[in-house]
Image (cartoon, rainbow, N blue to C red; front, side, top):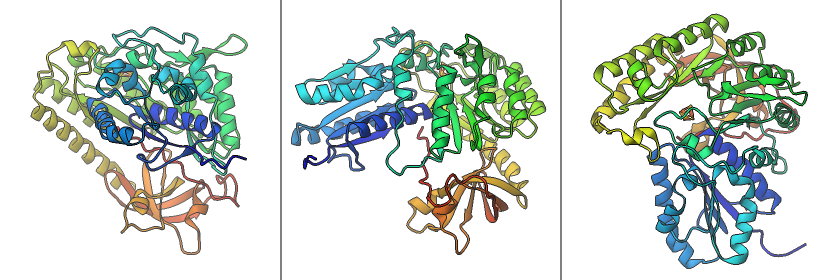
Length: 493
Ligand code: SF4
C-alpha cells in the first residue's frame, strides 16, 4: 500500500436538486478514484464548483469564488480548479478568458467524463474541456441516446458505512418546453427519459442499502415516457406503480411537474398507493394569461386552476407547492393582481417566488426588462406575505393533531446554532410539512433517524410545525442496530 497522502477534492454545489444529484454521483466517482472528500476548500488538491445558470445570482457567487482562487493557484500551481454544470456549459470559454486558472470545464451532459478530464489536466498541465457546444436556444446534442448520463446515474457509490435515508433518482434529463425565460433547454439539452428497468434497478439498490424515501427528478417529470424491455411505453403513472411495490420503500415523491398536458392517471395512482406522497410541486409562474403567453407556458390560468381542482378531487388533502416569477417583462399591476388571486385561490402549502432577471440566450432576454427593481421587490414581498398568511392558517389547523413523520435527523438549529438544542429532531410528513420535536429522554437521537414517528403538534409557524413525540412506529428503520447517517436534501436556490 502506498504511503502517499490521499489526494483530496472539494466540491461546492449551487442550484437545484438535479445539481445536488449530479454532485452526489460525481463524488461516488471520486471515491472510486481513491480521492478523499475535503471540507476545506483552499487546501484541497482539486477544487470544483457544480454551477447553476438559472439565475444571475448563483453565477455571480461562482465568479466571485473563482476570483478568490487566483491566489491559491499562484501559491499552489498543482491544484486543479474546475467548473462543472450549467454555468460551465452556458459561459464556456468566456469563463476561461476571465479566469485563466480554470483547469477543467465540464458541462452537465458530460459529467461521466469528469474523472478522465481531471486526470488529463493533472498529467498534461493543460486545460481539459468537455462541453456540448452552444446554448443559443437549441443545444447540439452530444449524447443523443443519453448514454453518458445513464453511465453517471448508474455509478452511484456510497461511502463505507453510509446509509442513505433519502435519495434523489433521475428519471429524465433536459427539457423540450423552451419557456421564454429559461436556460435549461440550452444547457441541459433535449428531454430524454431513462429506461424504466434502469430506474427500478437504481431504486431497488437504494432501498436495499437502507433508503426509505426516494424523490424522482425530472425537469418536467410528468412527461416521463420510455419503452420498457418489451417495447411497451411506460408513463410516469406506470413507473410510480412499479416503484411503490418495492418492499421497505416508505415514501416516493416526484418533482417537478409541468401543468400543461398533465395526465390524471398520475393522480389516480397517487390516490391508490399510500407510499406515493400526496404532494405536487407544480409551478404556475403567473396567474395572468397575458404573462403565461409571453413566458411561452403552454396552458392558461383557467387550465391550471382546473388541474388543481382535479388534483384535490382525486387525491383528497393533496399538498400543492408552486413557483411564481414576478416582474417578467411587461407585467402590469393587473397581471400581478391575477397572480395574487391565484395564490389565494390555490392555497399552496408553500410557494417559491423569484424576481425576474434576464438570462442571456433566452427568448425573454430580447424583451425590455421594464419592471423596475423596487417594483419587483415589492411584488415579491407581497406574494410571500400572502403565502405566509395562508401557511399560518393551514398550519394552525394542525395544532393538536398527531401526524406521522419520517424522522430525518437533528434539526437545522441543532446542527447550525451553538445555542440550539442538540436533541431536537426534524422530519417531514407525507405532505412535505417540516416538523421538529425533542428526542425523548433515554433515546439516542441518531437511533430515531429513518423511523416513522407519530408527533403531536403543539405550535405552528408558517414554515414549521413544533410538536412532541407521541409514539415511534416500529416499521421504518432499516437496521435497528446501525444508526442512520442523515443525508441532507437541502437545496440552495
Ligand atoms: S419547463 Fe420551462 S421552466 Fe421548466 S425547465 Fe423546461 S424550459 Fe425551464
